[in-house]
Length: 446
Image (tube, rainbow, N blue to C red; front, side, top):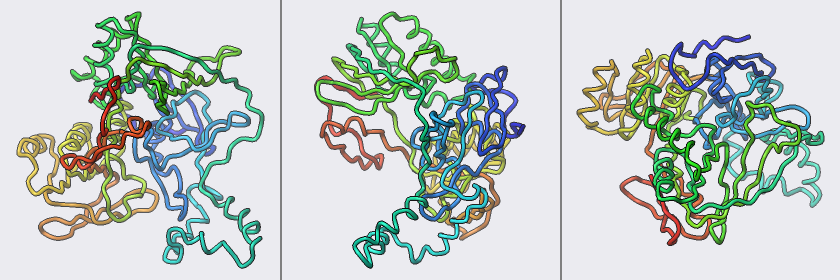
């Protein structure tokens, strides 16, 4: 059994009194109640979790939510085998069997990683013409080999032993997103006497508040607000529920996962598809942090700054000891301060020539090294980041590191607001798109 060598002894929102055993690629590992598969892997020091689709380059955990592009895993066996699931959203359960994808014969030694040597000859879309000939039936020969090499997981072929059900529900106010804005909206609507459905895809409410230290004022507000909503007879807290579509008449398509940590009663559905009809909808879907572009920014050990803060404060995992935080905004500095307070050696590389003086002063208190007008040029390392090449006012320099946190700003999550044809609008001040407009019975929060 592997030990949690990157797990902090205190803090987080996990239950250390309820240890969980699971396997990843046949290796026995240990986690805690409240972990995701991704946080448990990081706690055990696992940095390599997958391979890229085309060149089979090594991939690590990049985010802490459903936007995860790298850590796609297959969970379960036999009829419950399900591929292509983000490890960042998989709630850890006792006896979980998970495996990496798109590698052979093993994750550490993938034969098809040799494709990277052919990159100059395998430009994007090359296959559209390459596999058209020489005869009309040639594709029938190529197809078997291309599908075998495709970077997707292998689904189970046994009969599915579970059952699924469809429900219809109604609410005066449906709030999509259980972060601080969604929680505040739910409390206000409930106080006005409305029937409220609060929809959250995570198994915990709080959104970005879960990335705050568990002893902070923000965490105290979250506990108080959640307790207030749980005691309300007019509020339905729909955790583990994803809103996947908005339709005419304020109909919302929802998929709810059962609580995997509880024993499933005989006959109970594993997933529930709900058609929710609401008088009004509040979109409190938050934003997604943007990455930064530099050579080899896909290596294991490159992570969104907000994700690193989430793993630290929610899951009590310190994902690195020698860390570079590359940013263009104020938000990532809080990640740097929290990581430094947890014992890491942190350097902030800020693209801006003059970061706010207050942040620079606070960085000095935490022992954080600040390098203004500096950006990352390249990274070195195979299955984990080892060194970074930085370019600043004094030219290029090398810096040792085992984690690079990146933050290029934030992009509002506008997908659902666009489902009925209202195009998002671009805003120069945030460098991102925002909802273009709202109908009379729809609102935005946060």
